[in-house]
Image (cartoon, rainbow, N blue to C red; front, side, top):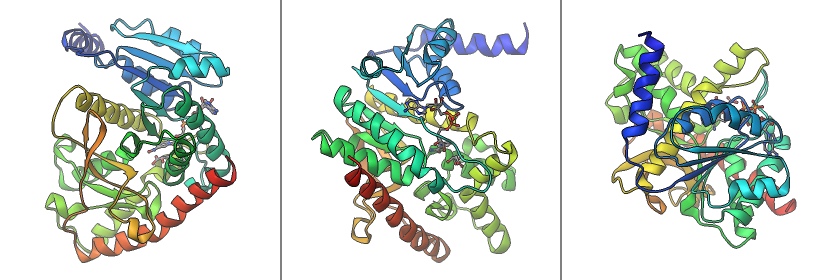
Length: 339
Ligand SMILES: NC(=O)c1ccc[n+]([C@@H]2O[C@H](COP(=O)([O-])OP(=O)(O)OC[C@H]3O[C@@H](n4cnc5c(N)ncnc54)[C@H](O)[C@@H]3O)[C@@H](O)[C@H]2O)c1
Ligand SMILES: O=C(O)C[C@H](O)C(=O)O
């Protein structure tokens, strides 16, 4: 048997044997994009998902038809880009992932995407607030530091905001931080789990290497931190104008969704870093902050504090908070001025 058949055989056996204790509808908005397609594929392979609903302004029914042939139990439906299509796609969802929006090109910051993506996320958030007000909303579209506050404002304006169910997906930062340290130390990346706090862009991404017991110093530490903070730019450059990280992001998004489903289905101690409505730095103007968060059936169960950090990491955190406060305010202002 070829290696590929063995891998797919193993995935299918796992999919069919794992217990699906409750029906879980998962919706992807932006499902035909660079992230949306592989993310939908990974969700189709997840036995915890019973129903996969795909929406995009183009091609969602095609992606659904394709993925729908995969022999795992979940149903897959692609919806047309109409108000009723979007409504039906969202109705009854436990998790709504939002990777809709434009990606960066070389030379752009994530904030340069604001003008286009802010209104895309606002409109999808409105639809979600109306049709799936109790769903867990997972925002992937950049700039996450601003699109999450926009989503919160939309939900507040509809009277359905539940801070425990809104998440900015920052998992890719942790995936990168873990992979990059394993490359330096020659360890198995699967055993690394570097905490990353703050936000999701440049200097707002703060890896806390010391908490994993590592003591890089000097240039090696600076280079490591820079690589984690600007890992997204590495991919944007390498793709030369054809987009940003899609495959690693799909893996990261699928991992976060899986963690939420596990926690919803009763597993204890599920902890993921994520950008949430957080008490940690509200006094410094940051209503949202990414840190380790314990997930549960109601979404956010417990927000972990940043914990003990080095002076070097404290300096990174100070810079992060300044930038983050502005990014958050920009999102809030946009949502209030453009309801
Ligand atoms: N959070 C993260 O860590 C992370 C990582 C990578 C990329 N991103 C961000 O994710 C977003 C998507 O990236 P991509 O590479 O998949 O882009 P893409 O252009 O390949 O795909 C985006 C998809 O969104 C769809 N879309 C646009 N407007 C829509 C709307 N109103 N409703 C529904 N669908 C709509 C497009 O048709 C397209 O299929 C970008 O903003 C990117 O910066 C975030
Ligand atoms: O870098 C980007 O623009 C996409 C994403 O936020 C990433 O971290 O890869």
